[in-house]
Length: 178
Image 1 (cartoon, one colour):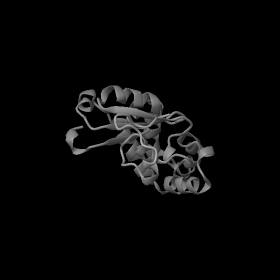
Image 2: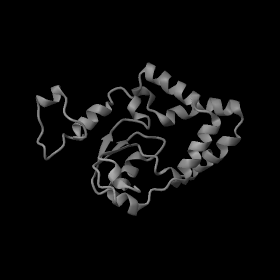
Image 3: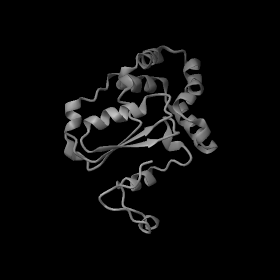
Image 4: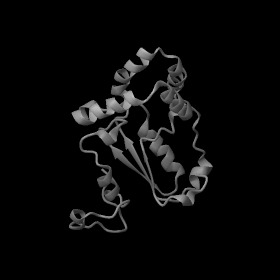
């Protein structure tokens, strides 16, 4: 938001900008550097149900998510959570962003209140719209049936593909969001 002219489109998916408003997340962030290594390593399995709607993620993507989570070192996780704890989006800076902004919000997010945060951000970003994912968890882009390219085309953030051109939508309105 320091130079709002640097981007021509902005896409936020389950924005973590609300992280600092949840004391329990601060507690986890402060505890992480001091956890015993075996406890940290097993925490991936405990946190997985909060991070993802496992019933909507295929086996290959579930295994890839577990591998990615296991690859994050304890010190890196602690550093990332400390950054999120300190991160604040200032309303005046957000109001300067004029680029079309898409706020993708998973309604089944158990980690953060994605829809409420998308609504808060939409009130501050002058050219924004919310795209709700009704059954998705926080890691929505790994879920079967969630296709970011199709979402971006539906809201006019990408040019229509050949198949999309057969059923044109009026240029003044994006395709249906629900």
